Image 1: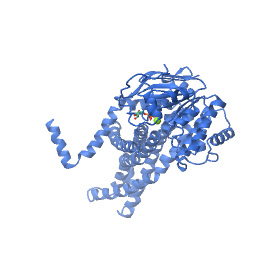
Image 2: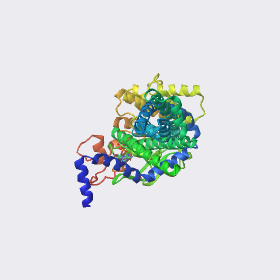
Image 3: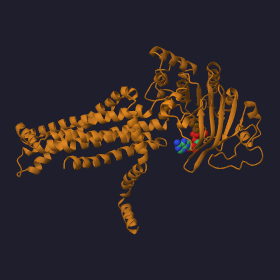
Image 4: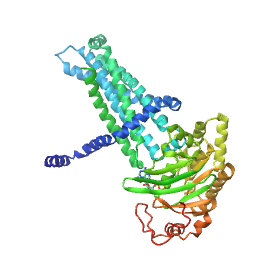
Length: 272
Length: 266
Ligand SMILES: Nc1ncnc2c1ncn2[C@@H]1O[C@H](COP(=O)(O)OP(=O)(O)O)[C@@H](O)[C@H]1O
Ligand SMILES: [Mg+2]
């Protein structure tokens, strides 16, 4: 009790309590509504049978959530590739042959930075977009209106977004990987005085085709998480504009945290 | 072929809104539901379409018990009901025409051309001819409201639930809407429940008027009976008498005789 109060006042002094309160509140909110969340997922799975409703809408969402996110994904990975190449050569100087830069850039991009950075960026872009849109529809009773016209709102709104995200995020990550590796390669050749052959040799050194599988599994789980959490928060928005703001923040914070948790989870499960 | 609520209870946390509401709307009848804001009028409508589940009590529409109806049957029943939302609730990613076509498509059995024709026809009924390619954001509040009404009547439901269809409209438009409500009843034999604050409208369109107060109907009767009611709550509401505490959450001493009101439906 005392200890907790001590920590509390320490946090207050350090002005750190706010982020803790937000993250803690979000976790508690998720836990306390775990039953509600499982019901939502159950409804989502059941709504998959309603192909006639979600089918025609999914392609539009793939474009909106996927294709429109391509610029930010590519922007991120381009700079990541450059930095990876430079930092690798800085770290290796003298001790390790320079062609290992190729190995590090390729491996890190595919296994970690491609999926995770893209996932985090998309939890901001896609997750927030979905939560804000569905949240606005909820508080303005548009979701109720869908129901009164005999549309299943889960099939009409949620399924297309979740499917689009789950399909498009891995694709975006693959594009990111390609561009990140390419930018690392170009940097190596132009800034680090490596030859193209050296970079390729390094890349091939530790390459394993399982890396791609791992990357796709991981990013699929990220796409699923971002869209399901965004839809769930949007769907359960309460109150007016303020409620939409809260739902959006929660969707982004929870999706970002879940991405990091899943990242560790897949490493434990698949890389051990 | 009617709406029947029995002993309906609904609360949120410690806030009890509906407390044993009994309400009947008979086939082909237009009933108005009046009451202070926050009394639970919109909530009552949401129970009828199954958007809300009661804590206790029953809701029957067409002889079917709405809260326990399996999804398919509920959806089928909903296509027989038109719901006019208090704040229109138009889909803002679609044009007005697409909004109206949503219900028609779901109901099925119409060609593309027939749908287009019905959309125009429904818009004309609410004085919005030529608005079908507009987006909701490009229209005034009153126009949005009327478009919401057009969307609800377009697929010719057997039941119409209107949530304050005329609030915020100018007097002339109010008359247009009142006439439309009467016309739906006369020409299509629709059974309607209309929530309204406007007593003049209520008298003009209703077969019966009910007043919701503290989660129950405190008065039900024909417009004439309602006007002559001696129930103090009804009098206060009709005459816009301030002073009466009308927060639904706070109990009000219903004091004296006639609190339950004569003609109260049982
Ligand atoms: N989903 C909900 N969650 C919590 N409270 C609600 C909900 N829906 C309605 N209420 C409360 O129920 C009361 C009645 O609301 P409503 O039916 O909209 O009143 P009105 O008679 O003005 O239409 C209000 O106090 C409102 O805050
Ligand atoms: Mg209301």
